[in-house]
Image (cartoon, rainbow, N blue to C red; front, side, top):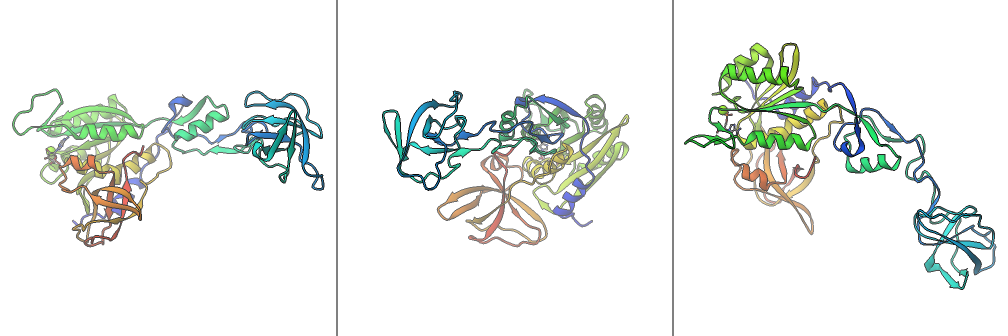
Length: 410
Ligand code: AMP
Ligand code: MG
C-alpha cells in the first residue's frame, strides 16, 4: 500500500467530523477558549457617551472666522467618572481629562499644550477643528453591532469586549470530552517502580497538556496492556462510562503491534490503519468506535513521544477544533530563513523541531539537533515545527522554509 500523503490524511480526518451538540451558559470569567454558540450583538453603545480623547479643554468649536486667539472662561472641570454638570455656553469651556464625558454644549477638545491659562481664562492660539479629540459614543461598539460571531474560540480580548457591553454570561458549545489512554506492556505509572526495560508513560501527560491548552474536558483512562480484552474494556469505559466524544491513544499502531489493535477495532467500529507519508508519525489509526450505542472518534497515535506530539499538532488538533464547533484554525505559518542544511528526501512531509528566533534581518530558524522521534527533549527545546513539504528535497543553509510556531498557543 502506498503511504497516504499528509494533506490527504488531514482531509480524510476532517471531512467526516461533526461538531458536538449542546450549549451551556458560562460565567464570562470561565469562557476563555470556549466556542461561542450564538452571535453576540451589542445591546449598548461603547463608549456610552461622547468623551474626551485628551487632557485639555472642552469647548464648542468657534466659527472659522472667529478672531484669534480664542478667549474662553473656564466654568468647571470633568474627569473620568466625574462629569461636568450643567451647560457650557459660547465663550465658555471646561477643563477635561481623558475619558471624561463631553459636557453638554461642547463638541471639541483642545489639548492643554495649545492653551495659555490666566486665572479662570484661557487663550487658544491653535486652529480648532470641530470634533477634534472627541471620542464619539459607540465608536468602539454601536448598539446592534455584531460583537463576536458564533463559532468564535473566545480569546482574552473577547472576554474584555463582552465585559465592555455588560455581558455577564455567554452561551457556549459544550466542551468535547476526550478520553486518553496509553497502550504498552512496558509502560509504568509515575508511582510504579521501573523494572529493566520498562518506561514511564510519557505520552499521556503530553497529550493531557495539549488537550488542556485547547480547553477540552479530559477523561484519563491510564495505561492499557497490549491485550485485546484490556483494549476493549478501555474503549468501553470511554464510550459508556465517560460518554467521550473522542478517544486519543498512543502506541500499538505500528506494524508489529497493530494486529491485536486492529482486531479489536474491527469488532468495535471502523478504524483504518494508515501508513502516512510523514516523518515523524508514520503509523496512525483513525476512525470511530461504537459501544452500547455511543459513538466516539478514535485517534490512535504512534508510540514514540515526539511522533505523538507532531501528529497531534499536524492532524489531531484541527480535527478536535472542528469537533468543538469552532472555526478550524491552522497553526500560524511563518516563512523563515533556515540557518543550517537539513537532510530531507522528497516523497514525504517532514516536521522538524525548530527554534525560531528574531535577527536584525527578520526571523530565522535552526533545528533542535538530533531528530530521533523518541527524543522528547528536542520537542521541549523547540518553539516551532519546520514543515518541509512532500515534494521538497534537501534544505541548504539560507533556504526559506515554512515554520509553524506551536509553543505559547492555546
Ligand atoms: P509502539 O508504537 O507501541 O510500538 O511504541 C513505539 C515506541 O514508543 C516504543 O519504544 C515504546 O516504548 C514507546 N512508547 C509507547 N508508548 C509510550 C508512552 N506512553 N510513553 C513513552 N514511550 C512510549
Ligand atoms: Mg507498544
